[in-house]
Length: 412
Image (cartoon, rainbow, N blue to C red; front, side, top):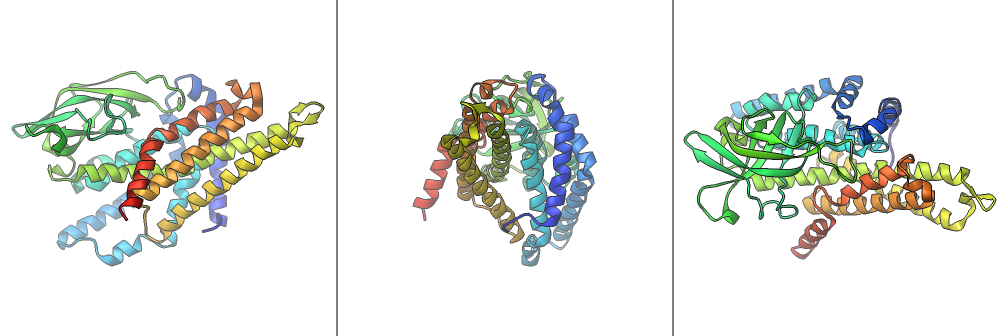
């Protein structure tokens, strides 16, 4: 894939109009007024019929899973191969285009949406029983319910599993959950929470099984903080979760078995999160470049538009190079989907490392090009610079990406 086709361009234009008429005018409220983004997200889903499409895809998937169970077979090769093709390519493009366009004004909104519809729903889709999928996933995919994926703890940032202290203890046919989670996207408002913890079976903590439970937001014993104040992503509510002797049945345990490979499931979630950063970064870079080109043409210093000066031209040229590279990364991801393939964790880490760095560099250069104006909240490059920085932190820091890439190379 080397460019958007006519259908992609038509969809992009529709999404762009929605963003410019619905999201852009509310940027101040989302950024500085503590306005939750969820009604806006639902309006977008209603506008583009995304709920019906999501439900149709979900029902088709569940029907296939039930048919496989009925005949006692695994997924046949022809079905795995069928995941590719033009339809899969177009679906991947349709996922990327809204992310790119929304990130031009509100990367925070994209983060809140991605965690709810993406990470939380997909965690249940990947490891849940059919009954669990039917119970929770449709409401997440349609935004009837807002989801949160809770893995990070105050003492476990990059070392998510090694330093994890949250526990699940067996008590008859129930589990008793305790622990604290922090930096949880949608945490203050989530209706459905995937809570990741270790099984407290008396064994050494480092060797304990990792389990995933699905909790309702109003579960007794679950408390949460107000939205935390952050450097950026103000449109994405982030909070802390506190579990004190929360009792749940086995029906809340993903897969309804302690033998689910929760560690590998989390890695799959990280892979999906990291590949998504490329589209987010592309949206930030495209908007920064657009704003900088307009400013370079109209801002006059020393009697000339600043775009006449070579140092300014160099900044613009480097931004365009970053935009082209990021677009090619996104196209590569879409192309892989068309081939029925997915990136490995190391490949996703490489994408995230480059994309996050490019977005931060371009956004900071945009602030520099705008000078004193760029440091003012009135000018959008200030927001984009703050928002871009988190791409180097969440979903695994730059340092973790480097480690993952290097381990993959050295083990080959």
